[in-house]
Image 1 (tube, rainbow, N blue to C red):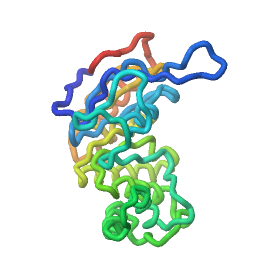
Image 2 (cartoon, rainbow, N blue to C red):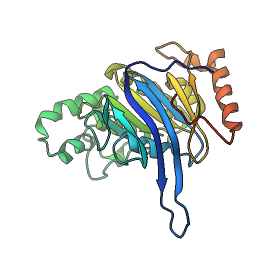
Image 3 (spheres, rainbow, N blue to C red):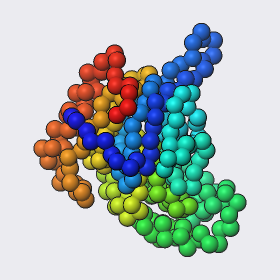
Length: 269
């Protein structure tokens, strides 16, 4: 399926390749190979691909946690060389500290940045309210369900006014019903925050339901196999999952994943 490159990109990935040293091996491991794409301000992009194709490495580069071997990633035109307050990272699991309440977990990035907690306490409570767990601010992670923990994790990612969300399979550990609820909640928050989102998943229907565009990566070394526009209107509803455009695109992406050529797209897309 043809795609329309977004204008005025918020995020730009320019010819990124990533090599990792391998112990007792003659050659380094090529994890990412010549990756280029852009994400427009306010766009929701999902990245799918098999395990080991470099999706998480790519997300860590966008977060400023890893520097690419070749190429560069840019946020608002500036090269990404370190973590940025404008960027919130949501991990595969909630990674909450067991000895801190939900509210204190949300405030953790503030403390790590050596900022006073006081001015952020009201915002932390507002974020917990926004993600639907405001009444559990004083609870500890062990007292929260998996879905509630991920809601707290999402609030934590937003505490320092982040408007770029990087999400690494945040719902993969949840049961099917909770996962569906969290997808709807994420879309509501993304729309409310007017955020730009990059979302990693193995779940093709999840990617189609959430995203404006879906980037399909090849098995290692990770290259861009194809980029798909999602023709579903917004706001999304659960009924969209049963529509012909939804099922047709999910099938097209799945078939493309099964038919991986040896040489995939490597240039700018």
